[in-house]
Length: 364
Image (cartoon, rainbow, N blue to C red):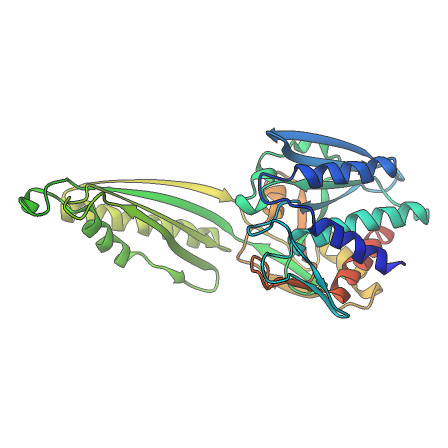
């Protein structure tokens, strides 16, 4: 295996600007690679110049088809990335992210399928699902045309942690927006005629549970906006928050308690408060004896990498696949300090991610 070629591919990929909603250059790059390998692709345009790319390679029809998922976008700052290569790792130069999240997976897939085809390794039908704007709230996966994917089981290579990390579960995630309505008045001349929405919102916020609620549940208020000027009693405040939990019953209990607190504040201040709650994604859970877990454990053992079971409280494209009836396990590929200008990936992990991909195909 030519690992230098893998490293070169990864470096080439991270140098392609692809911040969320601006993935067109990397989409075109992948198309050209696939054409050279005689694969098929379907581009699902969702927004101008960007969308999801589904790539497929025909194999042994007697084998169960498999899919692999990665996202193409990076967070900001992700323009003009200058990767620094040492003997042990590849890192950002400190001015941008590196983009190993998730271009390490893209490099692994492109080099992996080329290796499989070149060495005539028997394989099933393989689908690669490259999504856009994952970092903006799994947007690409939420718009994905699942009818184009003929495999019902697969893996998302989008977890942090060393290669061998197997994420057995992820939470259900709800977001909410609360609008508190007060009454405006001149703050200097007649403040008593107003009803201060900021004061009401502050009282509510002090009663909302935040942080780590228990081992399954976290909650946060992340955005507060309102008011127009210091001489106006504010008549409107918007509060935006979220709650996530591995336990759906606990999640529903939290939402009920939040609504109860809002009703008490409404009664206390005799004001109007509106709340809008929606599900960002649904959680999933695998047990250690499930088919996908056993397959990747076997693949890890073959390349002498120790499997590590983890439970994540973050979301990924795997959540969207699973809630649409496609069994998808998210796995770690070694990216570290993601979403920061200190992001890096160990060369050893990049290589092991490649070896794990090959091992999965050989043992499928």
